[in-house]
Amino acid sequence: MAPQVVELARVVIRFAGDSGDGMQLTGDRFTQEAASFGNDLSTLPNFPAEIRAPQGTMAGVSSFQLHFADHDILTPGDRPDVLVAMNPAALKANVGDLRPGATLIVDTHDFTPRNLAKVGYASNPLEDGSLADLAVHTLDLTGMTVESVKEFGLSRKDAARAKNMYSLGLLSWLYGRDVEGTVAHLQARFARKPEIRDANVAALRAGWNFGETTEVFAVSYTVKPAAAAPGRYRNVTGNTALAYGLVAAGRLSGLPVFLGAYPITPASDILHELSKHKAFGVTTFQAEDEIAGIGAALGAAYGGALGVTTTSGPGMALKAETIGLAVMLELPLVVVDVQRGGPSTGLPTKTEQSDLLMAMYGRNGEAPLPVVAPRSPSDCFDAAIEAARIAVTHRTPVVLLSDGYLANGSEPWRLPAVADLPRIEPAFATPPADGEPFHPYARDPETLARPWAPPGVAGLEHRIGGIEKADLTGDISYDADNHDRMVRLRQAKVDAVRVPLAEVDDPSAADGPGARLLVVGWGSTYGPIGAGVRRLRRHGHAVAQLHLRHLNPLPADLETVLRSYDRVVCPEMNLGQLASLLRDRYLVDVRRLTTVRGMPFRAEQLEAELLDHLATLGEPA
Image 1 (spheres, rainbow, N blue to C red):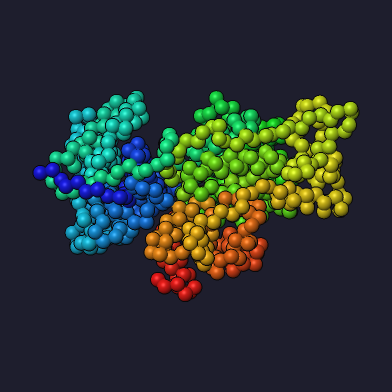
Image 2 (cartoon, one colour):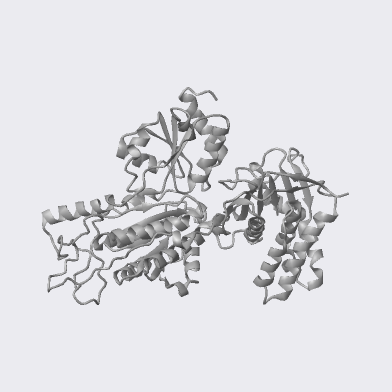
């Protein structure tokens, strides 16, 4: 009898296993199939930092969560509807996130007494009744995989490694996903290893056929495509979108792009992606360390290129002195910080937003610079162009604050029309006429930017270096009045950056006085805050949302906006850095709502916290 097919609006699936079990590939392939089908989606990869974490331990668990739906969604989901656990460690690390009634598919092959004891199970959870409130399917995925690929002559170890494809085939059948895209991917990926290629394809099809031919699953599901604006779409991660944005910024400005970088998690993929785009005038330089990376990028900016350097928290600390030099030289430089949990080496593969204050103040002396932050993986493209625009227009280093959640997460991205992208004008200096002296620190009256004068141009000869410059001439100066003037000019230049006014999402304002509670965020909290606010609005609560892209300078009307609400709450993945900035700047009682667990907020967590704030305002639950 064919299984019943149930239509769902959305599903959250989490694949979990040992690091090395291919969970990231499995999740990525399911994501690509969901994207091709037309679902809206959001993903959350989660993996250990160690190159080879101990097998079968909690520390070595790798997982990939995918939320796909027939409507617009903002997050990878709070709690999985389905968990695929490849071993006891994966089960123990993730089962606590499941709601009662969720589906649990377990590979029973590694549920041996030794492996159970390794993760602290006193008894087998598959037999002791502790999973009774879940829909548990116990399958020997490893054994069935080995059997399905035995014709290819692989060792048992190599054959068993295809179990991720077997599970992907099974889940693809369960949710009506095609597998042909994954077959093509495997054929290309393992083209030089035909036995591995064929075994993985066979395991994938065997998993799909297992679902189709057995009665283990009485129900299968379908999730229809989501409505979307017309256009061409592709699935994109934040790091890829950010790299594309830098390529686009180079084309929009007519400048060659030079990336000087040292590999560091989770920023390295930007270097990897940009290295593929030499045809678009991109040069990548993998330096021997972080200092050399930014030094080369700043040198490229001096030579007339769009200088870019990418890093994460520890690398930002090393780059601090050169960023200060860029402030003094007043040259365009894009500094990308893909934040991760800190301090020090911290949590390399976990996300956090705790570099905001370092981006704002982490240099010696008064060294102000603009700071921007993307809000979603696809928004990294636009944020990169905006950072380059500010850097080139105002001749200043700009810090672009992404984070690990954005960098590795993915979502559908509608390809922009090139004609709609804003032109960036480098406006290089030209030699003065009639023998007049060139003044390298003369300023544009509107942007306060100094001339961009690459070396080697007759008539533009000037001094360069980190010692204080005399206003206008750029000569070395120890004059106290000059230093006071230059410090204030550098601050005024940052303050002169054009920033759009604050856009508050407050639907209730159209029907009355509007909401009393405003939720302010920045960076990757946009999705969880938006999902939490949606939940409250569905229950009739009036809540406004404001998400900041420009963190320095802030929108000119922000103080007025903040003071127009009875309560302002700022959720952040740190201990309240933006909230402190807003309190300091505007003397407004911005309430902190913080997490530093290496994972993004959950929408249900924000819903509950914001309900408490509404209650203190006298609004009924």
